[in-house]
Length: 136
Length: 81
Image (cartoon, rainbow over all chains, first blue to last red):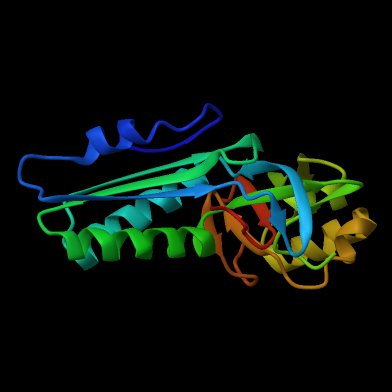
């Protein structure tokens, strides 16, 4: 399960998707919307993605994770559109026979996703908004 | 040939458009297209760093030829997650 969606993320759905009878571990990660950033109060976030390419890059990361860590299955779901404080913007689930590979692969996936997947967030605060990751 | 050019996030704001159709002569490179677009959209010229670029949804280099390409996307720094 690799996808972008505007609807809220149900982590259970990812866990059910990846878990198999040969797996002894399912590691999960949720990225959530924080109420502050760079010393500023955040009101909400808005995510934009390059549909088609973002999924392709997430598929590539999942394949790399399976190869590098020998994990069984990977699910990655990223939200787009407006997100309120506390909502999950990204969810990852990784199933593996043993916990170390599942945990290491999860860390690898979120770190790589942030660097290589064409997704952007706009931070809305009192009095304005800014695309994150770029000098004003 | 006619290309579909896409802009995202801050580049969309700077170009004041999400996409446009652009005619380019054969042999045009990504870099030459960006220079042309920066002339058309002064807001793009103020984007100091070179943006990442994708040709038909695959990362491409500044020197990449656009021959045979249908869609070019200019991508500001990612901030997903």
